[in-house]
Image 1 (cartoon, rainbow over the protein chains, first blue to last red):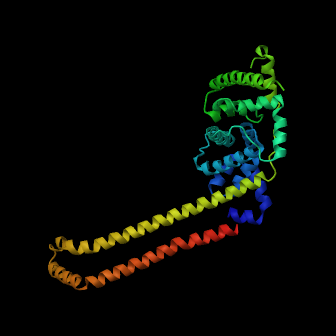
Image 2: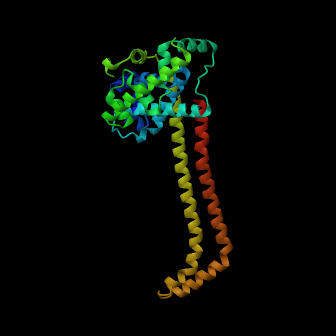
Amino acid sequence: MSWLQAAMWPEVERARMTEDSDLALVQRTRAGEVEAFSELVRRHERVVYNLSFRFMRDNALAEDMAQEAFLKAYRLLHGFRGGCSFSTWLYRVTSSVCLTELNRRKRRGEVELTPAHTNEAAAEAEEASDTPEMIRRCVTKLPERYATIVSMYYLQEVSYEDIAETMKIPMGTLKTWMHRARLQLRKIVEKEMKTHGPQ
Amino acid sequence: MDPNNMTELDRMIEEALKSEPLRPVPNGFHRRVEERVRVAAFASQERRGFHSRLWASAVLFAMLGFTLVLVPALAFFQGWTVRALPGAMGYLDYLTVFFMQSWGEILLALAGAAGVVGAVAAVWMIVPLVRGKSAHQQQ
């Protein structure tokens, strides 16, 4: 009868959904309620989009990847056992989608992104001439696992515990990886600065 | 990273990564995701329905084929089972003659039944597909 209730009192239904936990919404989605998944998207879209952006460094691509991540999450939802929080699982899916796309682009030699519109291209060029932005772009040149943990770590809303859970590694390993990632990132940034000069 | 061991470059990197602002989600992002999820849900529902209909048809045809093989096989081998029953041999003779005389009509009836079952199965599979396609176009 939940469909009848949703049809007759959409506001009440929406309010009820916003009170539901992620896990309850996952169960409702599994039962066939697309609206429950829509609420999950509403809750996590900001972090998923920003995480995608940190991998792709391009607005349009980040949006595509965030959409793909949600779609993949919807398809794989029956495999979500609830062993970790839904958000953690979703970040893992998002990272995997972005890294797959980055690998595909590397294989095809499309690593340098070329925005389609001139205005966007100009804006991005301006952004890239900025040292902090250049440093942020260097993160994508790190090995996959390091790029993932660095992207998540600096995304304010993801905790250290969540990252360790997402990567399925102990906290000690995460700290070691973070240390190595920082060392490698320093080398990449130094190289970039030598090549292009500090802006 | 230990702040005492940080070089100027380390500080720049840390600052650049920490200061990256959270970008707003593009307009219409939620609607676009929702649309794609609805299409995916519809497609998976159709796929599941199609598979179940396909399996049901396969089972139906297998049962029909089994029956087609079983009837003549029973007619051939029933002598083994009826020989022990009194009067069964006479009945067997009757059946054998009956089958020999009207084998053509039996085959025709079986073929007719198979045709009807096949037609019903085809309609059963095609109608929901056509309905689903038009519903999807309306969306």
